Length: 111
Image 1 (tube, rainbow, N blue to C red):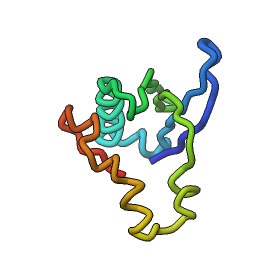
Image 2 (image 1 turned 60 degrees about the horizontal axis):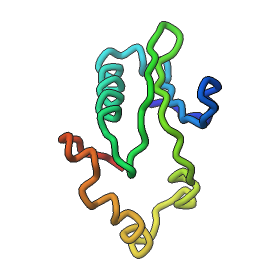
Image 3 (image 1 turned 45 degrees about the vertical axis):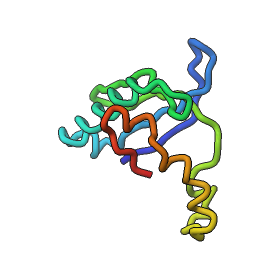
Image 4 (image 1 turned 60 degrees about the vertical axis):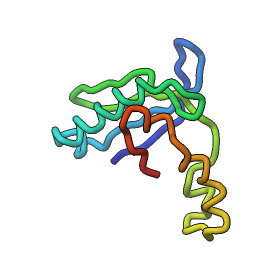
């Protein structure tokens, strides 16, 4: 649906992740509403296993959210851009199968 960029919030001197929707996605009201709903939900979650959303922006030029930056590898880099054998994938993802913080808000997290 878009791209995520690592950036510096110069006001508070902190690394952040900026999620920007592609313009053609942002022009679709139903997808824009989903983006907003996701930001509202993420902003309600306060848990050590979840990144925090700090702000969103929607104007004629861009639609974005600015979230807490969590260092680590992308799925593509971590998996070698392919499917992982179940012997590696299951233990690695087991912690996410336990009740994630979003479940307390009735949200199903998709990986």
